[in-house]
Length: 121
Image: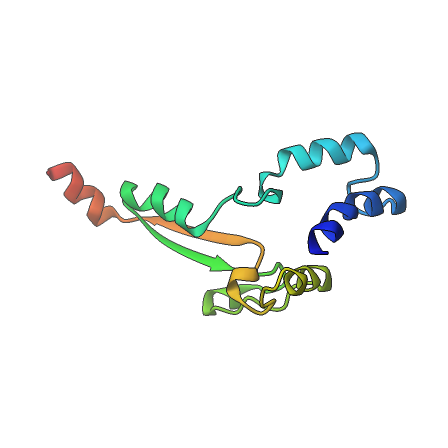
């Protein structure tokens, strides 16, 4: 049911003129460039950590739902929009879980002590 709902959204967007999916060409290219719309694609906490930590970065990952400001630094992911919550429920996921939050924000800071130690070795 959730997958059918997800796939039917593009037709709904085109018929209603909602968002940037107004024309079939826009819709086609928008979906082609958004790899995160395919299961298993996109960025993950593990990708950021695997890519940045070995290069001397301290990495902090924050999940959120587009609706909070600096509260995300305290672990507040806030409530997702209804359509995302519905999708989570239909997929059997807890919509209040941090794993259901859509975006990840990565804050990476270069650890200068680690860089100096690596260069001296």
